[in-house]
Length: 538
Image (cartoon, rainbow, N blue to C red; front, side, top):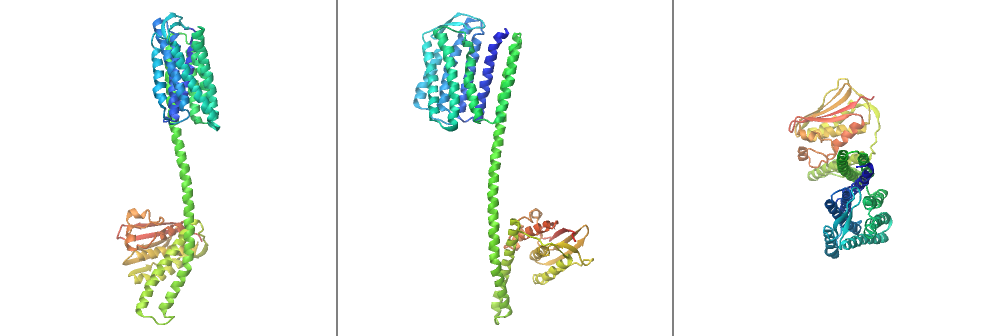
């Protein structure tokens, strides 16, 4: 086979590669869309039409030529039908076909395509031209074939023009481009593959049929790429695949033997298949990434909304706590005055009732204080006043304050002597005081009996240990102990009114001082030890 003859194979190969890649690219972009499915069908039928059209004039046997010609026009009928359907459904994803489509268009197409395989269209080959176009003897039904193709193609053009006229904006621009390509393609086919061969017996242009599809291919591709209907990464892969396929076809073009042509044609088919599968894989990956990006953006929006709600909640808690603080202080003051007899003697029954009210007021005051601390932490408004002071003196004073309360609860509280006498430290005494108060108060609260010891040590850092023989902590509860609103199951049983804010506040204050806090316990019923480690800053 000469290099000139191979050029026909190159034109067919380029057409097959271009429309095959484009067809599968659009189909994989949305496999549920009826438009995308139809375009893939249109692409595959175009390929079959081009391949059979090429083979028929590369064959020497008159009988084979006759059947390849019949198969060529068989696929030409379905090609016109797929063109009609493409522009009937474009650009919808779903569509319900009308009765005339099912009961007229489809039966007409099927009948016309079957007739093309009979002698009534091509009865025999009058002249065989190897490497060229053989001249068939036409039968009377060739008119049915021509009329069907013109009707289907013309109807497709009609729908495309109608939709272009009715469309607006971006869709109208796409339709104009495709209309231009479609009109050019079918004008060339009707003129060079039907009118000239049938009416004027000019057969020389029939082998160029694949080339006539380029206007539609290029216009459709440009409409898709220009308006961003496909991801550019996918487009890049499709273009590279096409270029590789064309390079193989050039190898076929310069082949000097049938074996080389066969071998390189197989490579061409494998490369085209691999390129389509690669494009599918990349498209799936890109869609997954895009879906993940959308979910990430939605999550960011949701997080921002939650942050605003959380901030509003913190502001509300802060305002409500401030408003509650003053009246509670007044209530506590008047209860103390009544209990002390400032307003006259009261009965034991009234004193007992005032005691219960005083206890409830104290609990409410602690709750308000905890809520205020929480709101300050979350709003970022917690402020520190670092001054130099004696850490031992601070802790010792707090222990002495709690000894009567512990004694009333039946618990022995004591502080082990610190050998060096004092620990000079730069810290916020008010905040650290709240830390120590929280730890000692919890130790007393969750120790129905037994002992509580407070100890201090100093080495590379300062350690404060509050050790009790109380209810202990389950190992699974230790890791979540310092989280906001987190309380162990056993702690909830002892004090159902707690909110789990105290230790959260302790952790924040200690960490803001550059330190650490943790808890140790041998398990439920075996007591616990809370340790605060502070860096030495004097």
